[in-house]
Image 1 (cartoon, rainbow, N blue to C red):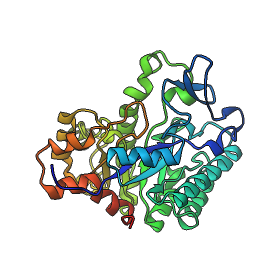
Image 2 (image 1 turned 120 degrees about the vertical axis):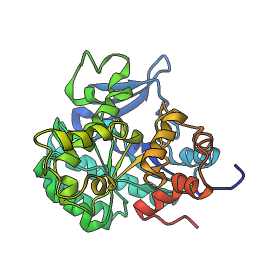
Image 3 (image 1 turned 180 degrees about the horizontal axis):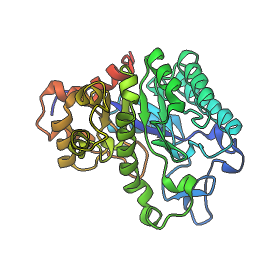
Image 4 (image 1 turned 90 degrees about the vertical axis):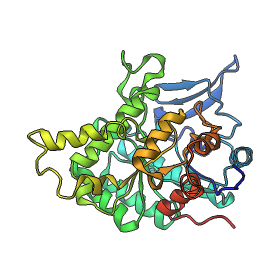
Length: 339
């Protein structure tokens, strides 16, 4: 494909050296073991064999250089979900998120091709509202970035009604990306082995979050709330028909939604991080090019470096390709191109 596109990546976690060791026992901590193995620790959870130190993950200059190599013009950088720290005391989580958002904003000021998403202390709904407003109005961050649940409490719980209303008032989207289940819930015989908590657990938890936001009335009550879901929405887009069938056939489904299913589903968007061209084709064909955004999982173990090849192979129009690569992100997050 010869046309040059404006490329904006919305799935790009960043590690912040300035927040290491600032959340008590939880750390976080990154380093290199004596055998050369790199690690990142958050509480008792440790992820290894990813290049964390002195890499595009944690060095903004190297990040921008790697963006150049991959043809990415701009990036929405976000907190690492391992450091949501919802299971930590609220006072520590509030300070940690404030420092995280300050650090992200400072990096973005020095590197204008980066824009930021805000972490929130979700275990304290009032503090989360305050921090969201500060992050957007004072720091210039463009969205929130939260987990698919908070210590097992679903996003449909009414304690966060004010937070969703705050998103609407500020005109900023909500991004949902799960934390690994074993970060706060301890060892798990199903989700522990073979990194199942991040390989399939994310997709399960994203689908559950979508269902709770829909069935729990969050989208009904907040029609201006836009929710972007990582990893192609997990299993939710593939099982959308099952959600619709439940509304039609289960006894609790009749009258559950005040606004139509399609109208509320339109409040979601999804990224391209699904790893297979046929899966991406399904997502784009069923959801439409207006609802799919480039998400590379930049610098992660599962970075999709060949994103352009996959998107180009879908046989889309130039206009639809441009939407997925950057146009949708600029529209949804209200971000102008860097001059």
